[in-house]
Amino acid sequence: MKITHVDMWKVVVPIKPDGAYSKEYLFEGEEHGGVWEVPKRIVRLHTEDSGIVGIGATGRGCPAEQVAAAAATLTGMEVERIDLQALPMARWAAYGAFEMAIFDIVGKQRGVTVASLLGTQVRDKVAVDYWSARRTPEDLARKAKEGKEKGFHGIKIKCALEDPNVERLQAVADAVGMDFKVTVDPNCRFYLPCHAITLADALGELRPLVAVFEDPVPKDNLDWYVTMRQKLQVPLALHLGSGRAVFEAVKKDAVDMLNISPESMVDFVRQCYIAEQAGVPVWHGSGVDLGIMDMSYVHACAAAPAATLPSDIVGNFLREDDLILEPIVIEAGFAHVPDKPGLGIELDEVAVKKYEVE
Picture 1 (cartoon, rainbow, N blue to C red):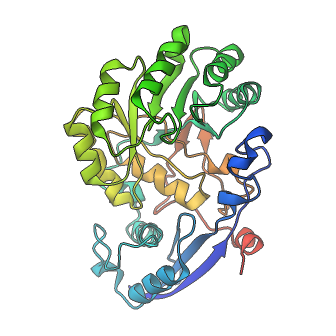
Picture 2: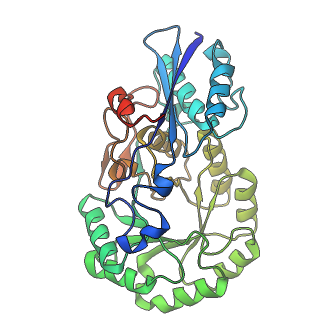
Picture 3: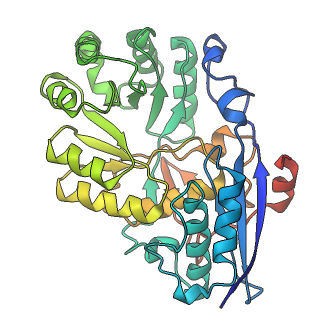
């Protein structure tokens, strides 16, 4: 069965007005501008069997020429001859989108889920947490309450050293209780280990509320992470995307858990195997993505035994549209893996046309 042609769209789907920041932090990333307006690209691969197509999506800012080059490379190829572990195309930013689409086609062809093609589907639902960028304590308390009412068991938040972090966590505890966990992600903006340790010490009785400090300081110094792990009174995580980086982190015993987020589903599962051997649990990060990419994360987590921690796969709650006909089913803090073959989703062409840009 040959790939006959590829459809490609460039889209911008705005984040909802209340999707990310409190207004006090809009300088960090305008809710209807900045990073949220960086285009993504949707691809659809057609085959000789008119009933089988595959869909995929890139991350933000993938160059058009990379998408076009990948489409040209794959067009005319026999699907059965494509190595799913290493697609015959350059490892550019477009790789993940075409990997999704090829797996979607093969899953439909064989009548199995993408998770099954990635190895063995070990779970039929994937733990998911709510998400927020930087907010005032009062506003974060409102979002935490909103997340709990939607059935989530925790929330991931962005922050910086200069923010009112203790007050934020106190507001969450007051609003939803200590059993609603918070992943604290400053994107390295605690700057130095002493700052992260001081903040953890200052939390006092609030420490059990914290699920983990993720990337508190720059990631290129694993010795800092070894030191912090010895002295921090909260768990510690790194956000990584390569097998070598995962190997080095677990080899040095630098983390309690990992956020693994490569461009490729296959790479995610492989890297989870490394973490699993070291006894380190994993979650899959996101970029507040659209439905196709989010569903690829769900399938990848369903195929990785180590992926037991809540992943922030909640783009359908935060974007104006997810560009798929039926949204990912998320109930009681878990995203369900579809029992349909392939990715188990369909492209919403009307929505794609609505959000397509030149």
